[in-house]
Amino acid sequence: MFVNKYFDCIPFCLRYSHLNVCFFVNWPNETGYVVFPSYSCLINHELGKLAICVKIMANIYGNRRFPELSPKSTATGTCRRGCGILIDMRKKTGPEISESKTLMRKLFVVALPIAAQNLISASLTLVDTLMVGSLGETELATVGLATQIFFIFWMILFGFTGGTITYMAQFWGKRDMVNIRRVVGIAVTVCFGVGLVFFFGCVIFPEKVLGIFTNIPEVLAMGKNWVRLGAVIFLPWSIVVPLSASLKATQQTSIPLKISIVVFSTNTILGIILIFGFLGAPQMGIMGACTATVVSRILEFLLYIYVVFARKNIVSGPLGEFFSWNKALFRRVIANAIPTTINEAMWGLGTSMYNAAYGRMGVTAFAAIQAGNSIQNIFALACFSIGDAMLILVGEKLGAGELENAKKTAAKILKFATIIGICAGLLLFLSSRFIVRLFDLTGTGVHYAILILIIFSIFMPFKIFNSTIITGVLRAGGDTKFAMLSETAIVWLIGVPIAFIGALYLQLPIYLVVLMVQIEEFTKFFVMTYRYRSLKWLKNLVSNIK
Image 1 (cartoon, one colour):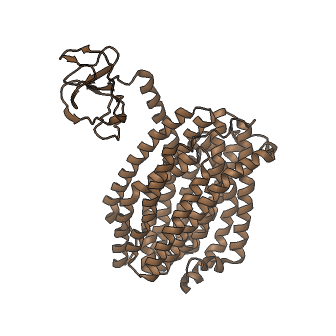
Image 2 (cartoon, rainbow, N blue to C red):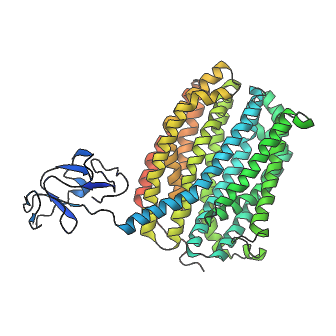
């Protein structure tokens, strides 16, 4: 049992570096080990202020006994041969403590800007939702359903770049900037092609696109113009997302944060002006929100071009270098990125199918789930940054060939993510009744939304744990096919059928349908835990790429 800075999850094993641990039978000898014949031990604080009796089980660490251990004299007596369990009592050494502190410092440096960016995005999205929600439940439901096609596109971009960032992070472990640029070029080429398909589809057939998610006549009439105007977003997004991924992979996460502050602030200010007609602007309602979003996304594109290329960021280089990839590299990147793309697209489409089921339960029910999702996203998206940071940090270790360090890094970050998930769920539970009051919902809508948030808070730790393993562990090592197959199967064979059965066949209240859908996260927890422990994700993908 190594005395560590962190508490261990193994029952009855306490690890904490500031505890001066001793047993009442034998004191640690000069080798740093102690043998005790009894299963009871006393753990004393070095100042004598803490005393905890702990029951030590004989099967800890595989019941390792050492019958040939020679007797050792101690301050309290002699340990007889073959009577005890060998326990490593050495305190964590200076280098080990320094390594842990360095990891946590690096985690915060990488993760906090991503968390802040996600938090700003979710918070200002909530502000947009509140502004649109103040116009009425129909307007709120319209925007919520109209944005589903953009959500699916975002999931495709996120999925594909999630597969490419595996190579970016591992190449960063080798400090190979040329191949990082080539991977960025592959990502831009594919994402822009997909963006064109979505752009023309939404411009030409907006009502049919919106009809996938709802059959409510007033929502279809109001939302088709929103979809057509918003289609402009697909094109700048196709370039921004790969550039942002490259900055994060090279651990420059503060740059996307700064850009997001400018972009989302612009979106919010313009939204207030155009939705309500302030400063002499026309009162545009939900179209004002759409216009503000389009303008802010174009601004975001211009800022990324300026920061990366005009200011000569390390990611920048000759334009031809971004598209100098050969077929071998292209195939390897695509082979890793296609599973993540399918994974995120199917997950995003599955989430949209949940909304399709909810959207057929009435305006009040859908407005309640829309409000609940907006609030949940503030908590969840900030926590998801841990998975993004894990992908970057673990991927860097794998690319450098440090497989054992990669495994240790993943284990420590996963423990941290679990704690954060529990705290986020508790905070969401405690604040649910107060935040819901910000929405202009009916009494029934408020009641539904509170119950939905309580359900979300209970399952928040599972959601964060699962997301961290999928986006952080499995993708860091290129284990993307398993992530795709398992998550897609769970969403579509368990989650989506349950949503439609509860909403349309059983006709349950919205909060009970949401509760049934959480079986998805619970199932995913066991599957992802099994895969993480198998270590099949622990792979260096770039060792033979020049």
